[in-house]
Length: 187
Length: 451
Image (cartoon, rainbow over all chains, first blue to last red; front, side, top):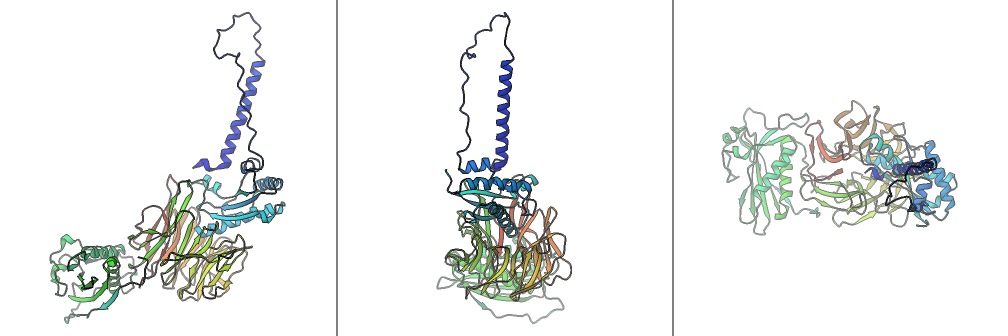
């Protein structure tokens, strides 16, 4: 179930958006640079010609501010850990800084931080490791000014994988702490 | 089937010994070495005395399956039988059984009593010495015919190997699946040791993990997510009632930190206390919980995670896994805490230690590189570790009550993700076989022998 890897999906979507914007710009440039200043007869009338104004699809303004979707889009909802580790990588700290910023902007929200592990360990060992991961993320958020009373933690061990395949790429996705908005959001 | 106080009464029949002691070794099945030559035993359908369902053929079949599953015995095919046993009180024609190479003959009979109960009697014969090795009878309600069959198998196993059997036992495990929303489900399930009478103990609305039996076989300690996070629960098999052991609110029997999870609990041999890893602010530590006084005592206080505790069968010591030495290794300490002695020194990560009911060995899971192994090590850490099984994934060893067989979770790689199933292997590393469970399963817990 690779579609459950949220970060990846969002990345892909963002790439497509950039691509779309780029191609529209290219089209506009192409139009501007082709002023037909000759006497060639006009082309045969087309039914769907430039006479009909281009349909403007309303620009998606993005998720409603203050919602979980907004949190995911602006901050990122998960951080990743190295194999058998619970220390925060630099990019995990960056994500948590954005999470703290968002949480400080919406002080009414409460969160659940869930620690997860890959499947390459025994069940109880992973429940303990998942708790360490959730706690590491929580402690960093608290150090950035998020009140501990707004944060609950849970370890799912290896029981709630985002990615179901048995390979390293998948396991890397599953070694994470995921922040979920529990209450006080606008949704 | 959950009523465990059985209506079975065992009566020992008179032991009739043949006077002619021949210059021959009596039949004895050795189980120390890997048994490459299983002992052939002939088990005709039990003779039926009376009308109605007497289960003579069914009982014999269960006994055959039980004994054959140990790989110490093989059932002689019935179509090879020459003598037709119609009266178990007559001496068999031993040459008829020797010629089809049956070293032992189990002749049984089911008699319907006036009160409707079944009287199940059997005689076990040594066909070469031409003498009776064992004669027993059991009385039971007809619906318990399977349990009587297991008791017959246990008696035969014990007489021929010199060790207690393990067939009249049950297994609790985690049935794994996926809910309609795509979320993984983990349900406790229970079955007879041979796969009969399976049923669920918990529903799919919450995860249930890591069950362990109480010495009375009446209760299960397990990890429940019914409160949202891992919490140790006690489940009463007779009533189906369950309660949280540790909680932050008023629900638990003992209080723990907010968000502090409590994990897999194992009973002391006297059933009066549990050892369990509980999360404190600094990490997970081993705790002992007294079920009578409801007092929770912290036994370890190390910054590293101490998890997966298991009592020695004399109740004096506790083995657990800890990352205090870097990677996870196994440690043994006094049952009241104190200094812990490391017993594993290999390169791999050692987890999931379980003390053998015989006391001399500790089973463990070792993860080395991309492989997992099921092994045993002496409880004092001396000598060599012995690897019984190696494969893609191993977890949750569970000893048979006699310490001769291990159940464990085995994971095999597949294109749909890892497939989990429960397998068994004997202490010699032979007789690897899947448990008779349909669907994905993990975390076996083997009951003690049921009275």
